[in-house]
Length: 119
Length: 141
Image (cartoon, rainbow over all chains, first blue to last red; front, side, top):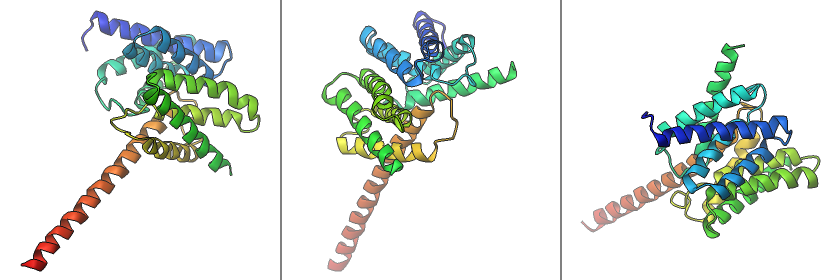
């Protein structure tokens, strides 16, 4: 993976989107569905197509329960991992509904493994 | 009865997302996010008993509704994908609970399942036709 401006933007966006969804979900108590919906609508309105898709995909990670993402720090890590997966799998299975969710699930599982290791 | 309600909700949400994304041309993200948001607000309010389950089903189906027109050319394809989503959701209700992206994974599996079924049916149909032709040629020889 090349570290260029585009990839750095994707990683930043993924981290921000995951963390924001986590905060709306757990700290504001809106729940995962409303949190994801809000972030998705905002991303679709304020960002161009590809970036909105990245923000929405990353938002799925932030829907995880506190068992998986116990704090906003883990949400940041989850967003970072989601960003890496998005960058490296961009062209695979494009156009399949739920591909973003599968990406997010992979990121969430890796983050859970990390949080398990750190106790 | 609950399974039927879940499958019906999935079909409604999936078709709504597909329609908003492709027919109204609002894009997949806005379509799915708006269906998800509306479901999250409406279902718990109007259906206190099953509302929390139905909003999750609707969100899951909306992720499936983000499928491209290339892979799901008609609304019927979306109906079938959504029905599979509803069924899979019921079957996998307690698996990997709490993992963000689980619903999207269910949606992706449902898309692949329907595409696989369609392609298999087409291949079987072509095989039957070619078998018919080769038998027909045999008769006239």
